[in-house]
Image (cartoon, rainbow, N blue to C red; front, side):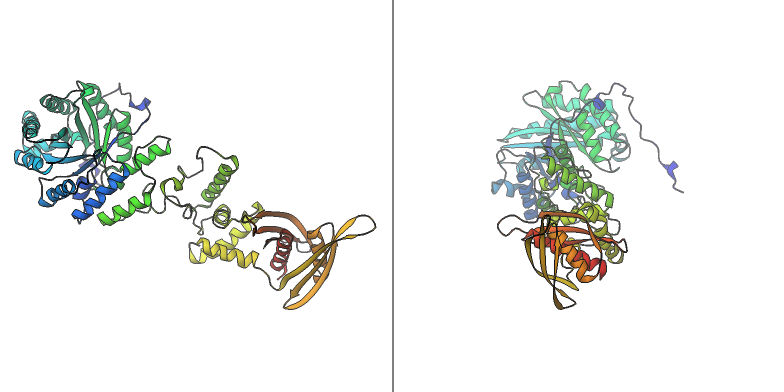
Amino acid sequence: MLNYQRYKRVPVINYPERQWPYKEIEKAPIWCSVDLRDGNQALIEPMVVEEKIEMFNLLVKLGFKEIEIGFPAASQIEFDFLRQLVERKLIPDDVVVQVLVQCREHLIKRTFEAIQGIKKAIVHIYNSTSTLQRDVVFHKSKEEIKEIAVEGTEMVKKYMDGFDGEVILEYSPESFTGTELDFALDICTAVQDTWGATPEKKIIINLPSTVEMTTPNVYADQIEWMDRHFKNRDSIILSVHPHNDRGTGIAATELALLAGADRVEGTLLGNGERTGNVDILTVAYNMFSQGINPELNLENIREIVDVCERCTKMEVEPRHPYAGKLVFTAFSGSHQDAINKGMQAMHERNQEHWEVPYLPIDPADIGRQYEPIVRINSQSGKGGVAFVMDTFYGFRLPKGMHKEFADVIQAISEKQGEVAPEQIMDEFKRNYSERKEPIHFRKCQITEAEDDTEFSTLAKVRYTDHGVEKVFEGVGNGPIDAVQKGLEKALGIEIRVLDYNEHALTSGSGAQAASYIHLLDVKSGRATYGVGISSNITRASIRGIFSAVNRLFY
C-alpha cells in the first residue's frame, strides 16, 4: 500500500472574495518563449549554437515578440549564442530578447557584456523565496532573502549606465507557489520601488509555479491576491511561469489569466524541467478554438513539430494536444459515425462556424490533413468506413450499404488490426465495383419499343457467363427494369430492385457516375448491394445490377 502518510497537504489561502471564476479569457496574453533557456537546460543533449539559431528563427516566425534566449553569464556557449544573434543581426527590431541572471554582481556584469549592441533587452533577475528553500538551502531570514533581490536590482541599475540600449527589468520570486503571499508581495514591492517602476517604465513581476504543488484554482487565488494587493498596479506587467508537475500546467495558466495575469512564459510543446513547462501552443490553440486570436502564427503545426524534434532530439507524444499524430484520429465506430455526419452537415448547411463532433477545430486550420482523422480497426463501425469512402475516394455509400461493407472490413481488421484507406478501397473494388465474374456485363443497346398500351424500354444486353459470350433481351418500364427482367429470364432467377442511388464522382467532360443497386433474391430473401461506375449513368446502373447478381448468386 502506498505510504501516503509521508506527505502533507499544501496549505491553501483563505480567499472567499475571489473574482476569477466569473471571468472569461477574452484576449491573448503577452507571450514569452523560454525554449532557449528553460527548455534547453532540460535537454539530455542541449542544443548547439546553430540549433539554437534555428529554434530562435522559428520562434520569430511564429510571432513571439519576447524570447528568453538563455543565461549568457552561465557558460561560454550561452554567451557566444547571444553574440551570434547580435553580430549576425538576427534579432528583428520588434523582438525583445530576454536574458536570465542570478542576483550576483559578477554574473550581472557579464550579462551586460553579452547584451551590448541590442536595442532593447529584458534582464530577468531571480532568487528563491520559498519557506522550504529559505530553510534548507539558503539558511536565511526573510529580510536577508529580500536584500538579495534589492541588491540585484541595484546592480542592474548600476550596469545600465554603460549600456546604450533600453533595459526592462523582470523579477521572479522563484518558488513563488511555496512562498507566503505577504512575503512574496513584500519582496516584489521592494524590487518595484528600487527599480522605480512607472506606468511608462513598467516592471515585469513574474510569479512562477516553479514546482506545481496543488490544484490550479489555488494558483489562480495566489495570482489574483497578488494582482489586487500590488501597489501601483499600472506600473506592473504581471507574468506567470507555470510548470507541469501535477499535469495541470495548462489549466493553471488559463486560470491565472482569469485571475489577472498579463503575460505567460512557457515553451513550445511543453519541454522543460521534470514534467516540463506550460505548453504555450496548447494554451494558444485552446484560445483559437474559442474564436480568440492567439496572436501567434500557428497555421503549420507540422513545421513546428519538425523543428522542435530536430533541435531538442525529443519526439512529440502521439496524443499530445493538437500536435500529436493521433489527436485528429478516431478509432471508435460511434466517433467515426458522428464525425462523418458532422462533416456532411457542415457541407450541406454551408456553416460559417466549425461544429463537428469530436473535432474541436478543423485540422486543416493548423496544417493537418483529413487523412488521419479516421482509421479503421476492429473497434470501428459503419460510419468510419463510409467516411473513408466519401472523404478519400468520393463514394457516398447509401446508408443501407454502410453496415454491409463495414462487416467486410471488420472481418479483415479482426485478423490483421488496422486497415488502411487504400486497403478499404481495394476491398470495395473486389467486393462491389469490380465484381464482374462469373456474369460479366459487356455492352447494351437501349431502345424504346411501343406495345399495345404504352411505350416500353427494350434492353439488348451482351454479357459473358463463365467466359461464354451470350445475349439477352428484356422489356420494362425503364432501363433498370428491362435489364432486371432480361436477367431473370436468362439466369432463371427472381430478383427485385429495392433501392437505387447514383451520384457523380468527378466533374468535367470526363465525369464518371457511381450507381448503387440494392437487390433482393426473392426466393432466399437475401439482399445485397452492387456498384457500377461509368461515364454513362445507364451503363453504371447496369453494371451495378450485375455486381449485385454476382454477390447474391455466385
